[in-house]
Image (cartoon, rainbow, N blue to C red):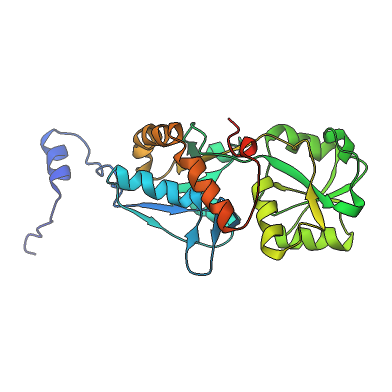
Length: 269
Protein backbone atom coordinates (compact mmCIF):
# COMPACT_ATOMS: atom_id res chain seq x y z
CA UNK A 1 0.00 0.00 0.00
CA UNK A 2 1.37 3.43 -0.93
CA UNK A 3 2.16 6.00 1.69
CA UNK A 4 -0.74 8.23 2.73
CA UNK A 5 0.05 11.89 3.25
CA UNK A 6 -1.86 13.75 5.93
CA UNK A 7 -2.27 17.50 5.86
CA UNK A 8 -1.27 18.87 9.20
CA UNK A 9 -1.81 22.35 10.56
CA UNK A 10 1.21 24.45 11.62
CA UNK A 11 -0.08 24.08 15.18
CA UNK A 12 0.11 20.26 14.98
CA UNK A 13 3.54 20.34 13.27
CA UNK A 14 4.92 22.61 15.99
CA UNK A 15 3.61 20.30 18.69
CA UNK A 16 5.23 17.28 16.97
CA UNK A 17 8.56 19.08 16.60
CA UNK A 18 8.55 19.90 20.30
CA UNK A 19 7.83 16.30 21.21
CA UNK A 20 4.48 17.04 22.83
CA UNK A 21 1.06 15.68 22.14
CA UNK A 22 -0.77 17.55 19.43
CA UNK A 23 -3.49 19.83 20.70
CA UNK A 24 -6.11 21.88 18.97
CA UNK A 25 -5.40 25.63 18.74
CA UNK A 26 -7.53 27.93 20.89
CA UNK A 27 -10.99 28.40 19.42
CA UNK A 28 -11.44 31.61 17.50
CA UNK A 29 -14.27 34.09 17.89
CA UNK A 30 -15.18 35.08 14.32
CA UNK A 31 -18.01 37.26 15.60
CA UNK A 32 -19.90 37.89 18.82
CA UNK A 33 -23.46 36.55 18.62
CA UNK A 34 -25.64 38.84 20.73
CA UNK A 35 -29.14 37.92 21.88
CA UNK A 36 -31.70 39.03 24.47
CA UNK A 37 -35.09 38.34 25.99
CA UNK A 38 -37.56 39.04 23.14
CA UNK A 39 -40.31 40.16 25.54
CA UNK A 40 -38.74 42.70 27.89
CA UNK A 41 -39.41 46.21 26.56
CA UNK A 42 -38.20 48.90 26.89
CA UNK A 43 -34.78 47.33 27.57
CA UNK A 44 -35.01 44.76 24.78
CA UNK A 45 -37.69 43.18 22.64
CA UNK A 46 -38.35 41.47 19.30
CA UNK A 47 -40.46 43.50 16.85
CA UNK A 48 -41.16 40.60 14.49
CA UNK A 49 -38.07 41.30 12.40
CA UNK A 50 -35.21 42.05 14.77
CA UNK A 51 -34.23 42.49 18.40
CA UNK A 52 -34.44 46.12 19.47
CA UNK A 53 -33.95 48.28 22.55
CA UNK A 54 -31.13 50.01 24.44
CA UNK A 55 -29.59 46.75 25.71
CA UNK A 56 -29.00 45.70 22.10
CA UNK A 57 -28.05 49.19 20.90
CA UNK A 58 -25.48 49.70 23.65
CA UNK A 59 -23.90 46.28 23.04
CA UNK A 60 -23.66 47.06 19.32
CA UNK A 61 -22.14 50.46 20.07
CA UNK A 62 -19.47 48.95 22.32
CA UNK A 63 -18.56 46.12 19.94
CA UNK A 64 -18.39 48.53 17.00
CA UNK A 65 -16.19 50.93 18.99
CA UNK A 66 -13.87 48.01 19.79
CA UNK A 67 -13.95 46.93 16.12
CA UNK A 68 -15.17 43.45 17.10
CA UNK A 69 -17.43 41.75 14.51
CA UNK A 70 -20.88 40.92 15.88
CA UNK A 71 -24.34 39.71 14.95
CA UNK A 72 -27.57 40.47 16.80
CA UNK A 73 -29.58 37.25 16.58
CA UNK A 74 -33.15 36.40 17.60
CA UNK A 75 -33.20 32.80 18.83
CA UNK A 76 -36.65 32.53 20.41
CA UNK A 77 -38.12 32.81 23.92
CA UNK A 78 -36.09 33.88 26.94
CA UNK A 79 -35.51 30.39 28.30
CA UNK A 80 -34.08 29.37 24.92
CA UNK A 81 -31.75 32.39 24.95
CA UNK A 82 -30.36 31.22 28.29
CA UNK A 83 -30.09 27.61 27.06
CA UNK A 84 -28.19 28.76 23.96
CA UNK A 85 -25.87 30.85 26.13
CA UNK A 86 -25.22 27.84 28.38
CA UNK A 87 -24.29 25.86 25.25
CA UNK A 88 -22.09 28.66 23.87
CA UNK A 89 -24.35 29.24 20.86
CA UNK A 90 -25.07 32.76 22.09
CA UNK A 91 -21.89 34.61 23.06
CA UNK A 92 -23.27 37.73 24.73
CA UNK A 93 -26.59 38.14 26.56
CA UNK A 94 -27.93 41.69 26.61
CA UNK A 95 -28.93 42.27 29.46
CA UNK A 96 -30.08 40.41 32.60
CA UNK A 97 -29.88 40.24 36.36
CA UNK A 98 -27.06 38.45 38.16
CA UNK A 99 -28.25 35.19 39.70
CA UNK A 100 -26.11 32.39 41.22
CA UNK A 101 -27.54 29.76 38.88
CA UNK A 102 -26.73 31.92 35.87
CA UNK A 103 -23.16 32.44 37.06
CA UNK A 104 -22.53 28.74 36.46
CA UNK A 105 -22.49 29.35 32.70
CA UNK A 106 -22.21 33.13 32.33
CA UNK A 107 -19.37 35.55 33.09
CA UNK A 108 -21.04 38.82 34.02
CA UNK A 109 -19.68 42.22 33.14
CA UNK A 110 -19.74 43.70 36.65
CA UNK A 111 -20.47 47.28 35.65
CA UNK A 112 -24.28 47.74 35.66
CA UNK A 113 -25.65 48.61 32.24
CA UNK A 114 -29.14 49.82 33.21
CA UNK A 115 -31.25 50.44 36.30
CA UNK A 116 -34.11 47.95 36.42
CA UNK A 117 -36.30 48.37 39.51
CA UNK A 118 -38.82 45.61 40.07
CA UNK A 119 -42.42 46.53 40.93
CA UNK A 120 -45.62 44.92 42.15
CA UNK A 121 -48.41 45.65 39.65
CA UNK A 122 -52.06 45.53 40.74
CA UNK A 123 -55.48 46.54 39.53
CA UNK A 124 -56.05 50.08 40.78
CA UNK A 125 -59.49 49.21 42.19
CA UNK A 126 -58.09 46.16 44.01
CA UNK A 127 -54.89 47.69 45.38
CA UNK A 128 -53.78 46.62 48.85
CA UNK A 129 -51.35 47.90 51.43
CA UNK A 130 -47.78 47.14 50.40
CA UNK A 131 -44.81 48.20 52.49
CA UNK A 132 -42.65 45.06 52.37
CA UNK A 133 -42.53 41.52 51.00
CA UNK A 134 -44.52 40.12 53.92
CA UNK A 135 -47.55 42.15 52.79
CA UNK A 136 -47.74 39.87 49.72
CA UNK A 137 -48.16 36.70 51.79
CA UNK A 138 -51.95 36.88 51.99
CA UNK A 139 -52.33 37.44 48.25
CA UNK A 140 -51.84 35.34 45.13
CA UNK A 141 -49.24 36.59 42.67
CA UNK A 142 -47.89 35.94 39.20
CA UNK A 143 -44.50 36.09 37.51
CA UNK A 144 -43.51 35.58 33.85
CA UNK A 145 -41.66 32.42 32.81
CA UNK A 146 -37.90 32.62 33.23
CA UNK A 147 -37.96 35.81 35.30
CA UNK A 148 -36.17 35.96 38.66
CA UNK A 149 -35.73 38.93 40.94
CA UNK A 150 -32.82 38.23 43.22
CA UNK A 151 -31.82 35.28 45.35
CA UNK A 152 -33.24 36.74 48.56
CA UNK A 153 -36.66 37.39 47.07
CA UNK A 154 -36.69 33.98 45.36
CA UNK A 155 -36.00 32.27 48.68
CA UNK A 156 -38.63 34.37 50.44
CA UNK A 157 -41.19 33.64 47.72
CA UNK A 158 -40.52 29.88 47.87
CA UNK A 159 -41.17 29.84 51.62
CA UNK A 160 -43.88 32.48 52.11
CA UNK A 161 -45.66 33.41 48.87
CA UNK A 162 -48.16 31.92 46.45
CA UNK A 163 -46.42 32.99 43.27
CA UNK A 164 -47.36 31.33 39.96
CA UNK A 165 -44.87 31.30 37.08
CA UNK A 166 -46.59 31.39 33.71
CA UNK A 167 -46.45 32.93 30.25
CA UNK A 168 -45.36 36.48 29.52
CA UNK A 169 -46.36 39.94 30.74
CA UNK A 170 -49.38 39.68 28.45
CA UNK A 171 -50.50 36.44 30.12
CA UNK A 172 -50.06 37.80 33.63
CA UNK A 173 -51.76 41.14 33.08
CA UNK A 174 -54.70 39.24 31.58
CA UNK A 175 -54.84 37.04 34.69
CA UNK A 176 -54.59 40.14 36.86
CA UNK A 177 -57.49 41.76 35.02
CA UNK A 178 -59.62 38.64 35.45
CA UNK A 179 -58.88 38.44 39.17
CA UNK A 180 -57.08 35.09 38.87
CA UNK A 181 -54.06 36.68 40.59
CA UNK A 182 -53.92 39.68 42.92
CA UNK A 183 -50.58 41.07 41.78
CA UNK A 184 -47.95 40.65 39.08
CA UNK A 185 -44.21 41.01 39.78
CA UNK A 186 -42.36 42.55 36.84
CA UNK A 187 -39.58 44.92 35.94
CA UNK A 188 -41.01 48.43 36.34
CA UNK A 189 -40.02 49.53 32.85
CA UNK A 190 -41.40 46.38 31.23
CA UNK A 191 -44.72 46.61 33.03
CA UNK A 192 -45.13 50.30 32.29
CA UNK A 193 -44.24 49.76 28.63
CA UNK A 194 -46.86 47.01 28.36
CA UNK A 195 -49.53 49.26 29.87
CA UNK A 196 -48.57 52.26 27.71
CA UNK A 197 -48.75 50.27 24.47
CA UNK A 198 -52.25 49.09 25.33
CA UNK A 199 -53.57 52.23 26.99
CA UNK A 200 -54.29 50.40 30.25
CA UNK A 201 -52.53 52.71 32.68
CA UNK A 202 -55.87 53.72 34.18
CA UNK A 203 -56.67 50.08 35.06
CA UNK A 204 -53.34 48.91 36.48
CA UNK A 205 -50.60 50.54 38.56
CA UNK A 206 -47.14 49.84 39.95
CA UNK A 207 -47.13 50.10 43.72
CA UNK A 208 -44.49 51.86 45.79
CA UNK A 209 -42.04 51.07 47.28
CA UNK A 210 -40.40 48.94 44.60
CA UNK A 211 -40.02 45.23 45.29
CA UNK A 212 -36.26 45.47 44.65
CA UNK A 213 -33.88 48.13 43.38
CA UNK A 214 -32.38 45.91 40.69
CA UNK A 215 -29.93 46.41 37.82
CA UNK A 216 -29.27 44.68 34.53
CA UNK A 217 -25.85 43.50 33.36
CA UNK A 218 -24.23 42.13 30.22
CA UNK A 219 -22.89 38.57 30.37
CA UNK A 220 -20.62 36.50 28.14
CA UNK A 221 -21.08 32.74 27.83
CA UNK A 222 -18.28 31.00 29.72
CA UNK A 223 -18.04 28.31 27.03
CA UNK A 224 -17.68 30.89 24.24
CA UNK A 225 -14.24 31.89 22.91
CA UNK A 226 -15.61 35.43 22.72
CA UNK A 227 -15.41 35.70 26.52
CA UNK A 228 -11.85 36.93 25.93
CA UNK A 229 -13.37 40.30 25.05
CA UNK A 230 -15.04 40.76 28.45
CA UNK A 231 -12.46 43.12 29.96
CA UNK A 232 -12.28 45.36 26.89
CA UNK A 233 -16.09 45.37 26.70
CA UNK A 234 -16.34 46.45 30.34
CA UNK A 235 -13.76 49.21 29.95
CA UNK A 236 -15.76 50.77 27.12
CA UNK A 237 -19.05 50.22 28.97
CA UNK A 238 -17.73 52.15 31.98
CA UNK A 239 -16.91 55.11 29.72
CA UNK A 240 -20.39 55.14 28.18
CA UNK A 241 -22.08 54.77 31.56
CA UNK A 242 -20.02 57.67 32.93
CA UNK A 243 -21.24 59.83 30.05
CA UNK A 244 -24.87 58.74 30.67
CA UNK A 245 -25.09 57.28 27.16
CA UNK A 246 -26.93 54.26 28.57
CA UNK A 247 -29.56 56.45 30.25
CA UNK A 248 -30.01 58.51 27.08
CA UNK A 249 -30.67 55.29 25.13
CA UNK A 250 -33.10 54.04 27.79
CA UNK A 251 -34.92 57.38 27.86
CA UNK A 252 -35.26 57.36 24.07
CA UNK A 253 -36.74 53.87 24.23
CA UNK A 254 -39.20 54.90 26.94
CA UNK A 255 -40.28 57.91 24.89
CA UNK A 256 -40.71 55.70 21.81
CA UNK A 257 -43.02 53.45 23.84
CA UNK A 258 -44.78 56.47 25.42
CA UNK A 259 -43.70 55.53 28.94
CA UNK A 260 -43.37 58.47 31.34
CA UNK A 261 -41.16 58.03 34.40
CA UNK A 262 -39.44 60.50 36.69
CA UNK A 263 -35.76 61.22 36.12
CA UNK A 264 -34.84 59.98 39.60
CA UNK A 265 -36.06 56.48 38.69
CA UNK A 266 -34.04 56.48 35.48
CA UNK A 267 -30.82 57.62 37.11
CA UNK A 268 -30.80 55.26 40.10
CA UNK A 269 -27.26 54.06 40.81
